[in-house]
Image (tube, rainbow, N blue to C red; front, side, top):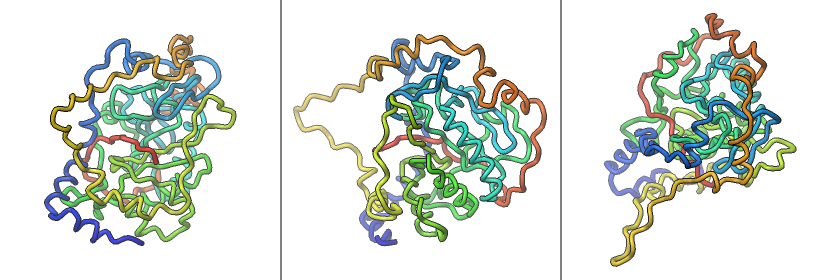
Length: 358
């Protein structure tokens, strides 16, 4: 790569600091866990709704400040995917996102040697801020895909709640991918996801971005879509563009040209991203604690989204129709292609999401 990571590491002074920072990255989303939101807050109100609205699908607002109408649910099971953490009720999204996830799962088997995907959080039934874990995922155009491959048998609901996450990082090194866990099939799956024109960004841990920059030998046209971001070491976060005709959707600035293997990536390997906040000046007033986001802070249409009529049932709003909601829940899954990655360690952090402007 164009910049020297050895030189960047020397700026830390001691490798013990790098180890300490690396350990902090493996803490998962402990820091994302928050106190119980007040009933009147946006988190409290959107988190309490169990079904989406009737009517056409529309994302409203920005990825990290908005809501949605007409969401559909990813079926809990498909030939090449399984939805995880079902109790969260976060497998709702814009039809464009749900369609992409199903397509990625099928193409991953065909072209990436991946046995099927495990899908984590997409959005709540009407979007909006979540109680924990994410700042974005609010308009149905973000989704998390685990780096853990889909097993050869259908998991029970209990197993989907309890299956540990698997980090791709070495625990004793700063921002370093573990060669015993990382595989070329994971790299192929990432680049396959980035190849779809509607995909705007894919957030991955900075160490994974560096690994891709250093080792990917195929077409690098879409490598710039992989954006380094804190967390994202046990899953990758897909973000798609505002769908055509979605007038209420606020787009994000386009990704800069190039493969992203430059100074913007080198910054993550300096002390700057991990520096503690500067102490206040003597005599300065303490800063006010952050205020809860209220529904009034969201786009005006989101208040009406909360009050809108619900669909009849989860089955009625499942992508592919009611039959897709139940066809594979009772029967065992057909065995997918053999997983060439071998056994994975049952350890790792809870996926975190602290998206920056990238």
